[in-house]
Length: 442
Ligand SMILES: Cc1cc2nc3c(=O)[nH]c(=O)nc-3n(C[C@H](O)[C@H](O)[C@H](O)COP(=O)(O)OP(=O)(O)OC[C@H]3O[C@@H](n4cnc5c(N)ncnc54)[C@H](O)[C@@H]3O)c2cc1C
Image 1 (spheres, rainbow, N blue to C red):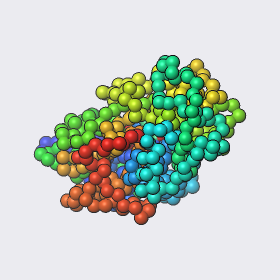
Image 2 (cartoon, rainbow, N blue to C red):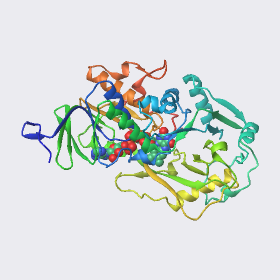
Image 3 (cartoon, rainbow, N blue to C red):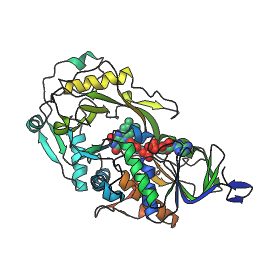
Image 4 (tube, rainbow, N blue to C red):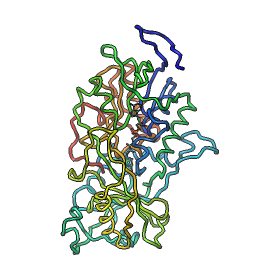
């Protein structure tokens, strides 16, 4: 039975917090940790019965430091400090089961579409080190790849897809510090446990039905079972469900950047016999074939589309209604493209993989901001790029929320990284930004 705490205006209030966070994915958990450590009274609610079971659970968990813009590259580089010292960052004792960062490096092939030059410029500006590799260096390190130029990316039904290539790729960028976290759900659980140690409260199986406002100010939320929770501020970080929750109270009315929900399939496929990916694996970013994949343990690959090509995107209207199975189309497209790059790859008949939803802005940058409703904050459009930044984004959201609750515009105050001497402008993540041009998912 829920015991009413205080009745306001005829409403029975069953729970209170200074800051209420809607969503216990990796970003919500990261924010809970930063805010609780900063001394706030935090309550996290999630409609699922476990932490990290939304988009986070479908994530490929790739932590790569290259990006289309300098700030995104720098944020990922800073977050690596937390991923590589995860136990210390969390303050977890030796008995806690923790997600593990696996360093495998990222190789970004020069597909001749300008991305490699853009990423190199961004990393140079961000002070992130990388290596420029020639074709010979790429072949020497990864002899199991065929570095012919197969692109531009074509449908696998197109006869030209099967033409024998005559040219080789010019080279690529290599970042040895990149890698992946194989269990993204566990990473979110780890962050939430650390937040709870710092005093945050967690309420699972608690679906928010509405965000409640009184005039221009948020006052809390009402759960679908009628439970009323009250808070001085609410952060909505509900992944693909964020847009609908905000729209419900008109809180997206002034957004200048459009967001959309996209179905994304990752396929899981065994690596060729005799290839030990624990030793020879790499995260390959292949703009020539529009795929990227990483090692999955020592004997398989996990990968999918790069996301940028409009005719390979599937837009989803209702985030509760989408096909959660790997389709024949995506399976064929990804595996056959991979087989061009890895000639020894065998393609099994049975399809295996993970399907999730991207919540993405038209310029592929997240929105970390307040809304037009006082006290209502948002972290959305994070897909499929922000798993890697979660440890630092939690701190960035704390900066946004604390600045605004203090009556200041967060975009005018630099956010100081807790992991380096870097400072960031949060204006890049504003809902009011003009969508950035030349931005890709990276
Ligand atoms: C297929 C895929 C691959 C990806 N690969 C990568 C990658 O390799 N590297 C990378 O950096 N990023 C990647 N991403 C992106 C990354 O996973 C996401 O940016 C991140 O997980 C988003 O976390 P979140 O906490 O914002 O959202 P979510 O994990 O979706 O969490 C939102 C939570 O809100 C809850 N919720 C929703 N509605 C309600 C409600 N009404 N009431 C209460 N709770 C609610 C949900 O149950 C959920 O737990 C990928 C994403 C996908 C989908």
